[in-house]
Amino acid sequence: MNKIALITGATSGIGEAAAMKFANEGWNVIITGRRSDRLELLADKLRSTSIRVLPLAFDVRDRHEVEIYLGHLPSEWRDVDVLINNAGLAAGLSPIQEGDIDDWERMIDTNVKGMLYVTRAIAPGMIDRKQGQIINIGSIAGKEVYPNGNVYCASKHAVDAISKAMRIDMLPYNIRVTQICPGAVETEFSLVRFHGDQQRADQVYDGFENLVAEDIAECIWFCVSRPPHVNINDMIVMPTAQANGTLFYKENR
Image (cartoon, rainbow, N blue to C red; front, top):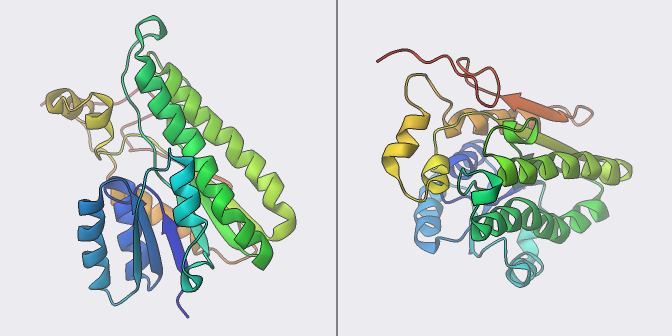
């Protein structure tokens, strides 16, 4: 029987790349996201690899929706082997005194509460079976704070702390917990952060070779494919041209 991976935020970027990677490795996948049209397109693409796919269109910020969709999975989909908590975003890049409170709530509700809601729905099944792995997608912003990153950095520091706490809580049940913290990955991340300003988003990645979503998908697969007695607790992944959250070596073009 094929193993099952559940991937949140699968309609683009790292989530989509992870779904393709796991499908290509022969896993069945549950993919979730808010954009049902994109979800169905991805589901069709995944089915071409001859694996089974369950697309679920809901918003991880909505506790009730999470409980409806993940708390009542069809019986053949309940034994989730790997949960990839990927849904997350940055919104805005302003000093705290000029911050948009709606942006703050969106980040906290998605990056922190959404991850908790999903984990709360899936972890009990893993505990009952005494096996599984939880992969939380953090960020370099969860390891250090950069100017105007305030609430986004805070939300990813929370992911860092919760990942450590999950590892303690899951220890008696043979469940591995891994956090993967990317640096600059060119996805929709900056476009969302800058509220659709494509020019400003493009400037983030100008002058150096950034990571792409498939790089992080490979890192996720590496962590999952280790022998059962091996757990990668924490992984920070950045482009060669990036030293920390804000320092890049950029070539003049």
